[in-house]
Structures are given as structure tokens and as C-alpha cells.
Length: 461
Image 1 (cartoon, rainbow, N blue to C red):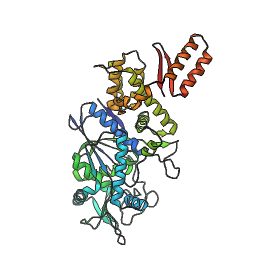
Image 2: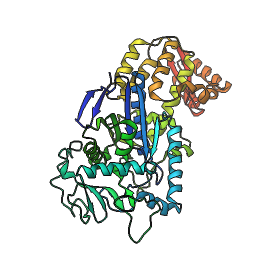
Image 3: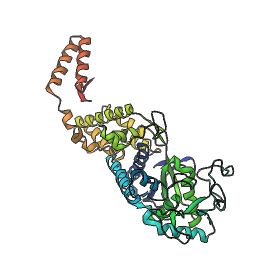
């Protein structure tokens, strides 16, 4: 049974879906106004792991992801510029073209990181009517009011507003921690519909019962998730930065509208730092998957690197760690090729340990450790291959294609073979200093020599 940390309860809980065989899961997707960085993509890799574990456990998963192509303002306090309009100015393209450009870039990263396709992709601009309908329900129930710049949700009328964030909202004071919005009754109130500026025509705007404008960012996720998955579903994922505002607001407007629980399990992913610094444009450390690939890094080595840190633990990215990850992944591929063909059955003892780890709050670092322990074990080669390929259904490293990626590397040059044999002669003559020198020369040629009980092994670096 999967046990998962639930932000709503701050506990690791046994996972019990609403339906015994089906799991409904919604993931907050990207705002497509610019490229996604590797911190964003780490989150989607961890979502992918969750989907794979659920499917391995026998569930049919309906995995819905949204594309935010309107309404996400630069400030969480319903002020500032729409990020899509900002991207339009930056790249000198229409908002609609910006959305297409960066959605395409996002899914290119998605593909090279070997993420399973979502069941459904929903765009905020395709569901404007559904969002307006949701506001009207909230209006009929008395949860809304009109301010100068839009229609707001009155959080004072929703008693459990802070049950996800567990923040005390009484201490919030306008103008100190929250920007002042004229006509806003409570600092925590949030926009459901924003009016277009009177002196400016936006590229994206729609007519509504309250005036021409566009939906608030939080509204889209409630409207689309409930349309696709029902008013009450199993899992909602996102980064930890979404807990205090976006997901808190989703819960408030969804449960106020339906009078039912919204989501049972909230799964949040920790941040990624670069060289122990927060990613920022000013520090020039916003790495992208495509950018790393252009420098010769295998995107799957980035996926492997992500697996080495638990999803709830902050990860520190360095280029050195990525290089080490690429080396480890290539070694894993080479080991797998050298082991030969799989048996019909794997190594039960290690299998039990691996699948216990993944079901223990997605403990991927421990699962990887089990894999390497299996490789070093005395189990038969064919059984090792069977188990490792089974593990890869979760790891998602495309190990079944290892030979396609590394096949030529395993064709050891005759010169390297000659040097390996010469080193072995030196060792038998107990001329260890010269044998070590020969080993270093072999390493410079791109091969590692390993001495084991079963003989010498030559592995490409």
C-alpha cells in the first residue's frame, strides 16, 4: 500500500482512493509566458514518479494537468501585470503566440525527461465560461463582492480558509505584508474576476455579467479540475510555493461552491537551489533542460539526479552533481548490457525492498540504493536484469534502450584490451606502481578497470 505525505494533515497517511480502482489526480501546470527552468521540471518528474507508482500498485490514473495562459498576475495579491502580457512585451509576440511557443517548449522538456503523457491537458482560455459559471454559483451563495478592479471572494465567510496553509490570517495588515487594493474587504480576499483597465485594451479579455475582463489565476484550477475530475477527487499536486495562496484559495472557492470536500491528498514538492543559491535571473543560474542538453548533458541524467533527493527535501543542483549523475547513469546502462538477457523472474528479496521503498512516501533515494545493492550482489545476471527492468517502470530511465545508447561504447578497442592484459601481467609480477600507471592510462582512454572475485571487468566511463 502506498503511504504518502498529505500537506492537509501534515502526516504520512495510507492512500485510500475514493474509488477502489481509479485515482483522479490534478497537477498545477505551467504559466506559459517564458521557458520553464529545471526547478519547475523537477516537480513534474516527481509527479511522474507518483503516477508510475500508483499504476504499478494497480490503479488506473486519470492525470489532468492545466496550462495557465491567462490571469496569472506578477503578484499573489491580485496586483501587477498579467504574466502573459509581460511575456508578450518581452518577446515582441502576441499573447496567443507566446502561449503556443512556451507550451511547446514545456512539452519538449516533458518528453526528453521521459514523463508519461497526462490523460488530459486543459487550457485556461478554453474554459472561460466554466469559470464564469463558478463565480455565479459563489455569488448566489453570498461569497462574492465587487471592488473597483474586480469581483472578489470574501474569505471571512469561509471559516476553514487557512486549513491547508495553517497560517494565522488575523495578523495580515493591508499595506504591510499585503498590497492595498481599493475596495478589498479583507487582506486575504482574492480576485475571481479582474476588470480590464479602462484606458487599455488587453489582448485577452472576455465579456462577463460583471464587466469585460479576465478570470483570476486561482479560479481556473477549481473550474477545470472539478469539470474533469468531479467536485471531490483524490490528489492535487504542486510546488510548496503554492500552499499559502493558490491552493488555499482553490480549496476555499471550490468547497464554498460545492459544499463538499475538494481534495483528499495534497502533495507538494520542495524547491531546487543552484550552488546553494535561489534560482534567479540576476544570478544567471536559471538552467533549462534544453540548455543543459545543448551542452552535452543527457536529459535522463538530470532525471536520475532528481531521483537522488526525496521530493519533500530541498535539492541543491550543481553542474558537478549533474556530471556525476551522467556518469552513474551510463555505468548503470553498461552494467545492464553486460549482464545479458533477462530471466522470467527477478530477485524477490530485492524486489520486495525496492517496492517497499517507493510505496514509503516515494522514497526514490532508497529505491536507487536497492538497485545498486542488487547489482553488486551474487544473484544471477539474468535475474538482475529482470528486476532492474521492472524497477525502471518506476524510475523511467529508459534502461530497456541501454544498448541503443551505449552499444558502441561497449566495443572495447584492441589497444585498451592490450593495455588491460599488460596491466594484469604487471600485477602478477607484483609491480603494482607500474600497474596503477597503466590503469590511469586506460582511464584516460575512457575506460575503468575493476578487479573482482569473478575476474577483471572493463567498463566505459
